[in-house]
Image (cartoon, rainbow, N blue to C red; front, side, top):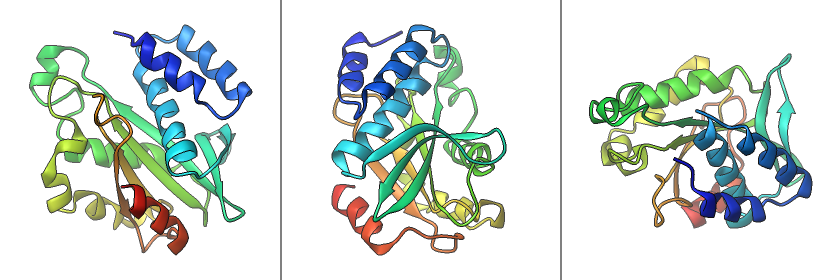
Amino acid sequence: MKNPELEKFLLDVLPKDEFRKKFKERLKNAKDDYWQIMSEIRAIYIFDKILEIPVADIEVKTVGQKDVDFVAVHGGEKVYVEVKGFRPIDKTTAKKGGWIGSDEEKIDRALRRSRDKFLEGSYNITVIADENTIRLSLFMNLLTDLEKTPETYLSDPDNAKISAVIILGGMYDEQQYKFKIWHNDNSQKPLSNSLKEIFAKRE
């Protein structure tokens, strides 16, 4: 089910007309990926408007023919961001925990699907958007924080290019623009102290 009101708001607040044109076209032709596209726009809104880290470009080529969803700029350096969204296929599947399994599996899969898109030695952030509105979203699972689940996966050497992982709030009015962030201080390029301060103030 689409959300025309939210769609209009997010399109209107995009920082560039060229972004708006591209996303309008994608949304018009969207099928199963509608909420993935919406989550990409939502992440751009959070970076550009809430965190005030300007988003410079979208669909940016990185490794080979791969690209990341968008690039923001802070202190003259690029921050590469890849958004991975998950949603249940139907209510029956969702009641069993979502279509890809547990919250831990969602985090692991998002990191595995994003890491090969990132450049070596850059600021790289994986954003996880859980669009499950039937069960509690990943954002609301306190055990994800208490058990430090994201840090467990970030410590894997295969995720060394990832500077941080962000989990967005669920698709509810009071959560849509909230987030939690976990830093990977052992990454090839950990987020700078100034970036960490920005996220800490808004988290």
